[in-house]
Length: 361
Image (tube, rainbow, N blue to C red):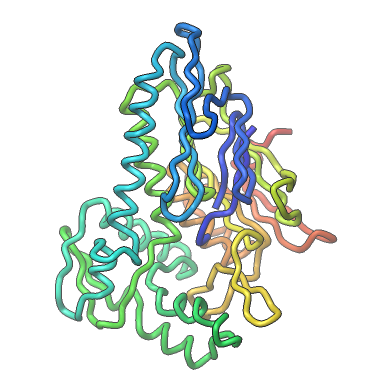
């Protein structure tokens, strides 16, 4: 069984039959892990399905695990598939990292008003999806809030959280109303506009990597990037993938799971506060910011979303972390969620019918 973990910036983790630890500890059960000290352990079991796992480092500043299921005697094909998947992850990182000088997003954020910045079809696709989730979530998911995020990142040095006036100014400085999207790029109406795709680009990268595994002819596979997971096919035992959702009220690598779900060709992502937070003075604040107020989201201990794509699961898990239970009514068709509120002494678990149907009883 694998564990679903919280996303960097907003996430989940993979596993054999199920992936669910919201902390960054991946345990793949129901699959045979053939990796040791970063080297391949090659199996010689003929055409029996086995799993090969690769753990690239330095991908989007988070943990990464790629698993491919194929015949044991196709280890060279498996290695090639995993490296192609890794290449897709790094390609997305090179285009959409706001801190990488001269990446597409860096160029956009640094551009003056009125200058169209050329963007790849990939980056435009993520921006369009982000805009769609922004509208459907009534503003709870917003990639244009980088000025507000910068304020919170600087707060630990000052020892004080941002003031209401500072947050209001940051909110006014950047919004979707100040961006024009075209078929080949985007234009800012104000030089202060800044975008951060951290809450959705990881999911898109997972989707791209998984498609690479499929194109390579794999029988099954799983990609996990910072708690954003997508699977296809089956495990070597011919079973669906089992993903475990970490208990948000337990800490450390030994934290247990609060639920397990079974997936075949879907994606899952979890957003939670226990994994990433901002420490200001003697108080910890959630890293998930409510775009409408500029304040940390407080309405859910964790949110886990299942969707057709990792990009959609990524974005909606962040949106629901901001909205809380009220946001469940806004979920579009094909998106299911489980939301946990309260604390370790008294908590509630809310789930859509589709999510409940996937739970391991």
